[in-house]
Length: 279
Ligand SMILES: C[S@@+](CC[C@H](N)C(=O)[O-])C[C@H]1O[C@@H](n2cnc3c(N)ncnc32)[C@H](O)[C@@H]1O
Image (tube, rainbow, N blue to C red; front, top):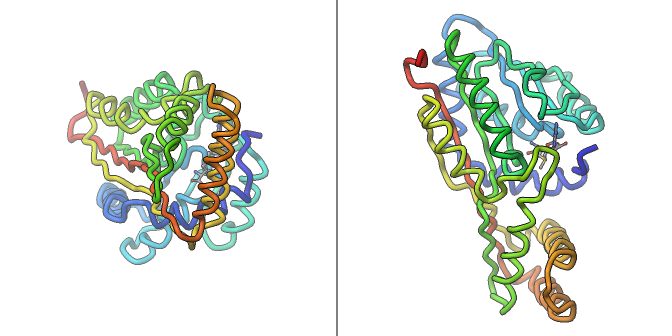
């Protein structure tokens, strides 16, 4: 178990799908198709797949624009989430699931994949994990082109309206906690997008990125409510903030569930191999 429930992933799914940058997603689908002109089936590997959110994002676009079959390998440590993905999609989409720990990169089923994907994952991982992954993809590129699509990397921004005097202090503690080790070593947290951008650029990939914020309002009140609870819990454990002030912050935030807004910043990134990767 990695601590991500089906309920939590379902709660965030609509906001995630709206937030993903459409152009980058389309570019990923187009690239897969043009780099696979002969075969009718193309393999994608989704890391930290959960119940298959990335597969669902690709399915809609690929259905309309690509004549090729997308065949998915979903990798996650949580067998319950993978079972849910199978139950939702096994009859309609081509997918295999792999219950594996991502930290063992050599064991991942990357062979033959045209695109490695992930969403809401890379802010949890360490610089070392990404270095190894980039190295592995670069080596594969010597035989055939492999790209990386990484969506919804939290960028450290949370903006509320209306504001509260503690918003900045609370965000500061929350963002520090984002670097807590989630099983991969010290997490990149809000720095993951920038780190990936630089890493894949210097590893011989052309990197495209776009902002993909959650823009939440009254329609997302359940998600915002859960977000407030999650932030308040982390901040209560980690900070010197006066508990009464923190409680006031939480109560104020909840009083605005149906009238305020909340922006949570993310970036999406697509790294595609440049023509020659034989350096
Ligand atoms: C925030 S969730 C994102 C799930 C899915 N990609 C989505 O967007 O809904 C992170 C996922 O990474 C998985 N995960 C975390 N650490 C992992 C590890 N060491 N090995 C494999 N999967 C892991 C979790 O089980 C979870 O499904």
